[in-house]
Image (cartoon, rainbow, N blue to C red):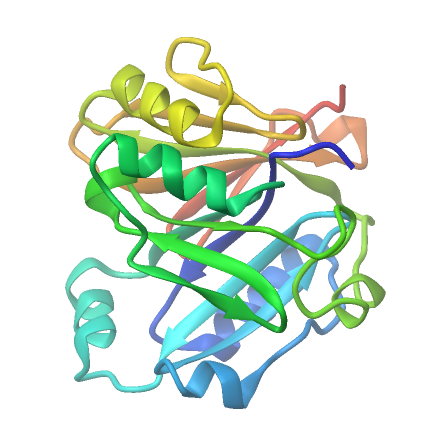
Amino acid sequence: MTLPRLRQIVLITADLEPAVAEARSTFALPKGVRDADGMAEIGFEHEVLTFDQTFLEIVAPLDADGPQGQMVQAQGEHGFMTVLQVDDLAAVVDRAGELGFAPVLHQEFHGNPISQWHPKHLGTLAEFDEMDRPDNWHFAPESFEVGSTEVAQDIVAAQIASDDPEAMAARWATVLGVSADGAQVPLASGTVQFIPTGEGRRGLRSADLVATDPQRVGESVTLCGVEFRFVAGA
């Protein structure tokens, strides 16, 4: 498996169960994976749903009056985080340091080094993680065992709204050690694209998924305020 690659997008909502039920129904996905205790330690509940090699996670704050709960009340449900897998997280951190910023979280999770990055630096809450094996991911093997490609094959692009799309793409490319193409960052697998903020909110706005049924190419659905667009495969 060649890296870096887009592996997961995260949505945030005030009420987990109906949001998860809608996502499962929309994409014909079976019940996903949960880490109730681990997520409770950071104030969330969640479920991770699997396509083939990419994942959709939905989170909800446990405390409606806490910072994240108040954010959802103020902004509504929305795209929360974009997650990439990298081959050398230490190198990513070093390159970011040369630009003058550092991750807000840098630790091990189940033996793998992970990092999270503030939206003021990367335009959205971002997570860059290094796995012990290139073909591995969080909660494996369970996460891979509950996937379905009945409706969509995989997530192949994430669109992030930014006040300066090309500058943000260049920043991501520098941190990841790849080359930007205008306002997008082509990865070894998947693409992160930057769009003008316009009148909407900054951050994760939409995502592209490869449609299993070619007849669905061009359709879109909205979950937790994020548009999911069905596209053709390569």
